[in-house]
Image (tube, rainbow, N blue to C red; front, side, top):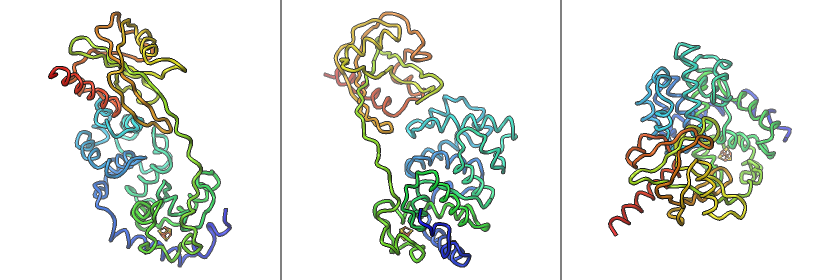
Length: 373
Ligand code: SF4
């Protein structure tokens, strides 16, 4: 950790004042016009913050408007069915966020009359609200001078302060929180926090920061020492692993079996075609038979009829789909909690992940082609 972190001259009062002023002036002039920047409603700010976690701004915009139109208040969200909330979130990914948002809304209706409290501790007890989200809400909705730290602000602060160590280390992280805390002004803390993140998103970008256009260039340690490209230090990313999975299209006439995942774990409570990992050296056909049996059916899986590739964290997954026509037996819960035989149009009403939706669409197109051929 460099000794100058949190030490003068950067953190002397005159420098701090200039830094804040410059950053706020830059933000007033160049900030993107984003829908959540037009509201002071704590709930709408909260929804935006949750949607923006690990998701690009452009992907969030269409979901944000639709979500608030469907659930305009905490009470409306709390009164909805979880399946409807997941369905509206469909395609945005990281569905845990939607479930946490929903359960937090229900908790708020019980404990705080359906309002977000202006209280860090109470907010921090809600599902899905970590220090960043709590402080983003407090600073933007309640004008509390509390710091934020996320990917963009970490990069800006590391470069500004010349932090060469890995920001993922807890000791570095702690110091960065302190730095962010020292920076955030009493006046316009929400604007300032957004400005810090916006600078990281537009100017102080990971690969080609536009230092020539940066309002903080004169204060930047990385620029002064010519280390911009080396900061922030990133740990080597984990190796990508290829994973082969088998999925089953169990069919009875025009209907296909859709199953619901258990209430915990990845894609909890969402619906999908049954699927699972292949064991070592297992063929697709054997894997399909094993899965079929675990679901309570017998039948004869044909060859692969479709495949979808997608990535989950460091796993690159190939979903190999095999059809089983008119399987015998009855669904038994275990791997999945419930099952329904549905036509493709019935499936629109169910929350289904993007790769699974792609697979179902492919199967529909394949069927149409085979009919027309
Ligand atoms: S001068 Fe360059 S490296 Fe420093 S904060 Fe600005 S954009 Fe980032």
